[in-house]
Image (cartoon, rainbow, N blue to C red; front, top):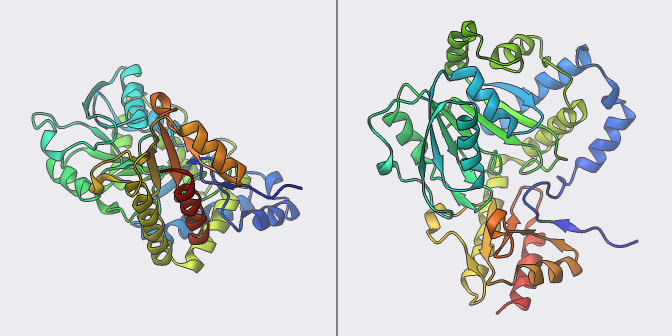
Length: 360
């Protein structure tokens, strides 16, 4: 039997190192078969929300809703809390797709767009509008560009009446975000939480809920709008049948992260990203795609490869390490490396050593 590969892909990625054991426990307890209307499920749901709040230091008025994916949240947010106007900070494929979804749903969507590898400057934002909702991609998974955390506080000052929504799909909970400035945040479990794909998390606060209540009488909300999520949340249930197994596994991984400590997870993340970027900066034929160090993602490291993408991926794969290619138009020009909590310092050091030996 061949040795297990180590997945440094940006999602799905390597499973959190305790998931295999938790999966065995879940099967033994028949978790996949329990009803989403049962007391057992409600206890799992409530425990998951409480663990997440404790781990990340979330405000108590945040509610956790579950969706099939993080990208599903785009439509849910728009249909639940927007009458007409949205503003989108666009700097890559995923931030642009949210903007395009708003357009497709016929909202008055405005975008401020910068080239991939950059972030939107707070000085370049329109001052003559007060959008109902602002879409910010904190960590653009397609390019490895990360919007500075302080910009979220600037946005709140510039747009005090707007709902600020944050795509933290590939950075939460590793990066410490100013949650009191954020009205809705969404994430996917297959990235920093190290779980199989198929579950999205959507956090909303009281401001977001109040806006959705004002909008609900117009009939603009869908079945999976905030109103239906909120109604079921009161009993820690979901509007439709969720991925019960994934929610259970998330609750167990959150327990593990709490035991390890988020401060330690964050310290290790900084170390691992530092040695990866140091390697890229020391080479002539590969280099960090994001040039400004203030904008470099800590959790998704993207390298230009001078057309060596396929060669690098193949050589690493032969050693049992799997990294991702570039996204979209950058498929053959980049490699993308995940730096998630499940990736140990030793694994990242091994990856760095192998890359160091194979590229000039």
